[in-house]
Length: 294
Ligand code: NCD
Figure (tube, rainbow, N blue to C red):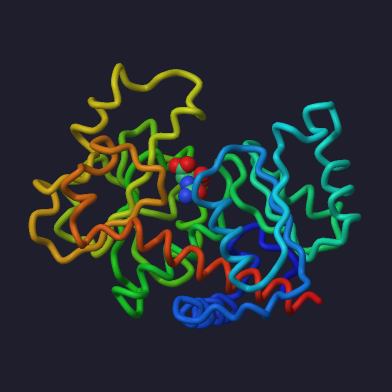
């Protein structure tokens, strides 16, 4: 078992299945003493609504102590380097540190400076492993075996760590992936199919994963208004009709740009279930990393 979870490739398929088995149990049971006397520190250098609270709820449900560093008030503001911050926190003896940073690669570097497990809670446009795990967990609940099943990942794929982690994870589990976006949102890669048109692929797919336009990572505005983007890429009732599909989104959703109000309220839309599953999957990840790494 790898000590850190920096990208989904740090886990074998067998380890992922074990995590999913545990996560299924954790949807029902909350074994309060499993991580008793363990300490988990969360440091989020970039804003987060779901991921940070999800990790904190997960840790608490297993009985661990949680300390979350408020970066805006910490010594980082006083010029302390990232490495010194991490090394100092590590010296307090946590069992795991969860880190999010706007720059790709920061968790991989920090992992070299700490003795505990380091979990990547999202780094730049690079990776967001626990999000991809909870997405696959949610997809498997509806499709069972995902091999050869079809998914369209729609939106600002080039700038999305969620897309990156999902592409590598879902490919490993045999899913047939099509990236759907305007050309400037598509990454340069030749190992997955790509399309500029949702309408062309909608009849073939079992799952749609919609992603937010990552406006904070655009150097230049791509659209005069996000409404122009929405007219081609918003997931609407008119597009999905009564098809047998599920719709995912990692959040935060741009309403009526990524997904319409009507589809968000449709039972095929699993956005809130992803959030619920996310806590269970993170409980299982914390359990595995902390209990197997001593
Ligand atoms: C995403 C993130 O921050 O990477 N959200 C999340 O963690 N659930 C996606 C996003 O910001 O669009």
